[in-house]
Amino acid sequence: MCNGYIRVLVQVLCAHLLCGWVHGSELTFELPDNAKQCFYEDIIIGTKCTLEFQVVTGGHYDVDCRLEDPDGAVLYKEMKKQYDSFTFNAPKNGTYKFCFSNEFSTFTHKTVYFDFQVGDDPPLFPNENRVTALTQMESACVSIHEALKSVIDYQTHFRLREAQGRSRAEDLNTRVAFWSIGEAVILLVVSISQVVLLRSFFSDKKTTTTRVGS
Amino acid sequence: MTSLVSCACFLISFAWFVPSNALYFHIGETEKKCFIEEIPDETMVIGKYRTQLWDKQTNSYLPSTPGLGMHVEIKDPDTKIILSRQYGSDGRFTFTSHTPGEHQICLHSNSTKMALFAGGKLRVHLDIQVGEHTNNYPEIAAKDKLTELQLRVRQLLDQVEQIQKEQNYQRYREERFRMTSESTNQRVLWWSIAQTFILIITGIWQMRHLKSFFEAKKLV
Image 1 (cartoon, helix red, strand yellow):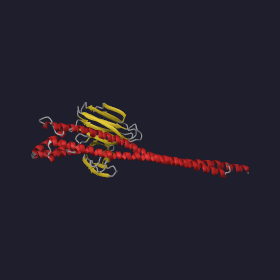
Image 2 (cartoon, one colour):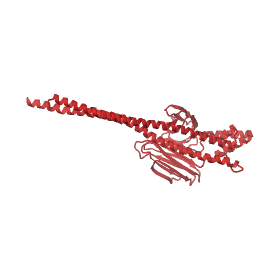
Image 3 (cartoon, one colour):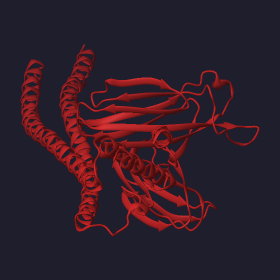
Image 4 (cartoon, chains in turn yellow, green):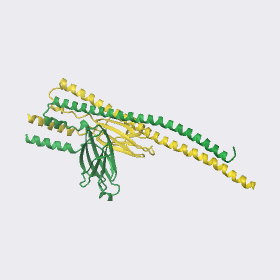
């Protein structure tokens, strides 16, 4: 009984390591102004890959994205995009490179989220172990798993959009506070200086007239 | 039996450390790179990294460099440091969030001795897994002695729990957003009233002051 479980464990681990090229990475990083950040990944020919990115905060919420294959040929290139998703089948073996560029911006930092999926998710159990097809229960579990994965994906995108909206609202809040105080101060300064200036005009005239008189 | 167990142990330890074919990027030797993870509370995060140093002689990245270390610093949403440790050139760090929000994971190399080699570059392989992706299902299956079906259901349960935590976090964030918007609304209202008031008062003061000034100067 124990032997059986250990055997299953070893098979799963072997499958996990053999399918080492199958995985996904999602990262959120800050891209300073005039900066470019590149990421590299080794992909096997024929693997289906998806690159999805979204700008979370900063400026006009846009970034340049570029995806190149091992020979430098551009597979995907977009300028000033806020959100996009690109799926491709790797045409050759090698290191693929994708870059995000904020070089067009002079002073805004951008926070960029990306999700790079390589291949499909590894199966929970290796297929070699199966003598029959999946039972109804198991195939139901598989479809629920896929549906939940897509729910999690939608949740992530919703969270990013909400973060965007919230950062704008917080910006607005601080801006309103500072500009109101600033305007009140400017108003007082301008009105006092108007009165002082006007007084200074009349004071000078008075002294000149008296001098001329005497 | 024992050979199987030792094989399993070896494979587990191998899969434990190495981010097999993870994404990689280049950083300068003294550069600090930060990643943001916005997560609900009580969520586990496991990060694995591997670093390679650029070798000028062979014009390639060395497979491993002993003595090269990375300093990992993790800050919680209140910018309090929850983890600040030095690891070797291959490392694995893990933490569990206690407050929901944006956690910052920062990496920089400890190269004070490497600073002599100007323009040194590091290749960092990084893999960060959050929430239910941190679960090692083969291990769970072996530990709890679950059948295939039970393992699948366990995976679904973990996924649903993660969705639930995220929804809860979403409720908390929406409340914050609403509070910010209401505060902005209040501020705009009060400050427009205050500014109109200030305008009227300064107008009245100006006129009265000038009137008394001209009367004193016998111009009016």
